[in-house]
Image 1 (cartoon, helix red, strand yellow):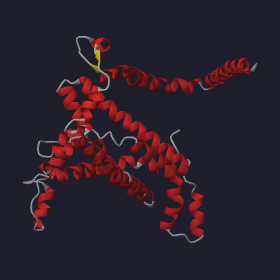
Image 2: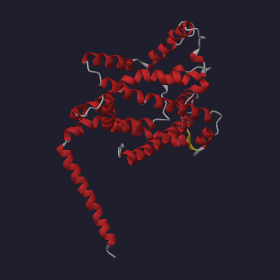
Image 3: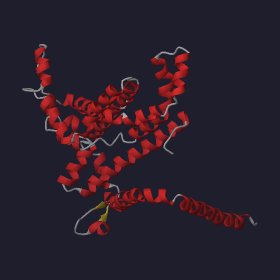
Image 4: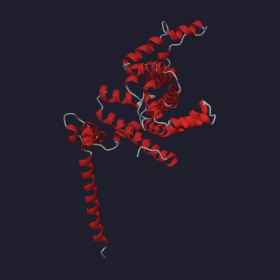
Length: 319
């Protein structure tokens, strides 16, 4: 008979204890809370508060009426997207480019970090790091411009080499079958060095006495990499893999849009470019919001699923 009141009494006590612990933590570490407050404010203002606008995905948004007064139409925009002629092509392009990028782009920074970590000369190591980091700082416009210059059928260095060895010149930018490879490998070249920084930081945290003991036991350099370095940075690798899988449906917009043309659009049209064309150019704000929301929900599901699998398999996860 008295179980319900006892439960009600325990709940306020638990809440009060949590408030007390948070208060003590805040007073003890107020400098850290102050330091992180601009970051929290940024996410609240620019990421969470604008979420109220997501409701236009379920409305027939009219700018004159505003968000709240626009007519509610439910899931009509989602149904329209699922039944559209371009749905299968857009989803296939988005997923295939993302998985291609994940399969090729994810291992390269790890491999580069392992190689740089094994370099004995500090001067050569710094030179290699500088050379591999530099492409990251090129703007997307400059990067796409370089791609077009290098792959030009008339004056591009790649076609000059193909012609030199007796091959047939290729119009890379207008042949749709080349688009995905150009996008992925140019991205690997540009981001490989920058992405390797976090692996190098993780490798620097490995206890050097482990390598000394392995040398004494006669372990080769390859054995030490396999049995010491890789297990030492495995948690970092798993976390980055989870984050990358959580963005499978979010292929970057700017680079694809700049590389896109009427002849390669069959393999280059992805969700982000489709949303831009329908929402900004076509002024179909509700429809594009619905497509973007669908994209975000799929990413969220993938992130949670992969995180749970990683936690069970490797006991490493984001939360």
